[in-house]
Length: 413
Ligand code: GLV
Ligand code: MN
Ligand code: MN
Image 1 (tube, rainbow, N blue to C red):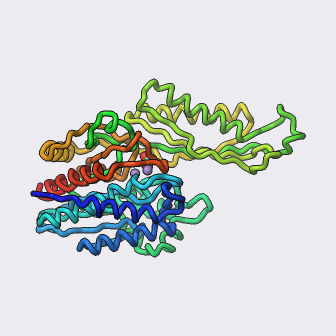
Image 2 (image 1 turned 90 degrees about the vertical axis):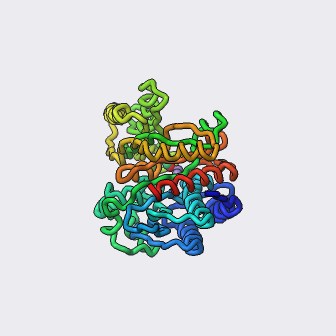
Image 3 (image 1 turned 120 degrees about the vertical axis):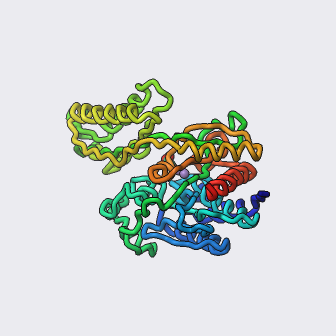
């Protein structure tokens, strides 16, 4: 089958999405259910309609755009990613996998391909944890790893519930209907930017992901005592910030302490109150992200951080609440789907690297319900979650070609 990927259309889709943003270009900020997210969704819905796909949306706003196959009752083959972007992020994270899936389906249609299993593009709601403190909301809920009751308990930083947000965005279908029926999908393939340097360093256009690292996140709220910055003597203070500062260093030490470069830990949120230069901080909130490809080692780091929190807070006479926001196992990609992608790369002459994903993706959850794998394309300088994130359009097009051929093969498997 001769497949022609329309790089111009891909570029136009990425350009259009980048404009739906609450940040100054080249930065992109697009929080789930915010105005920019809703406008970006409307754009994509229109593209799906124009491509002749059958669109369905669930109560969370997960969007499914289907090309029915000749045997529509067989489990479908899907591909997709997310369009939400964390503050001051780039334009490629997630979006490449959404517009890439769309262009893969359009290219297959143009080539006269006839799917046997239905093919589908999925836009997952809120892969980034920005608004509700938990990543991969849509995919977690779709596979039943997040129940409707748990969804109803989610709140943003200002206390506004997910239920309020989704209904104000006009997603009103019951949350009970978000979980997928067993056997809904026969395979899932996600195209994504690498977000790391390996492909560029090796000079290779395609990564085939064999495993996804295990992510976890903690929220620690430390409470001390405020007071006058001039008159409370140093030895009488219960400064919440200083306990938090020690904890942030303990997080770094816990990750370094495993001796493995696969262990990483980050204190990505650190806020204090009351926030006056002449008042002692009485509250510090830290959100801590911990990852490893090895689950046992990741969990040991979590335990070490919890023990440090207890010891630091006791020594500094402050109290704390620690919540585990998530602690997910790693995912192993399906060997047969990985093999399908490798064969496509070999057939169309694109050298590839078999690799792990250190970032998490909706594939981490899709892998629990169907055979799943991922296709990576290079990220310039390995940079991501930054405004200067960049991937070359030709390389994105090559990723889409690998995706389209893989979907075609899986549709007839
Ligand atoms: C996804 O955005 C991640 O943080 O890995
Ligand atoms: Mn991301
Ligand atoms: Mn992503």
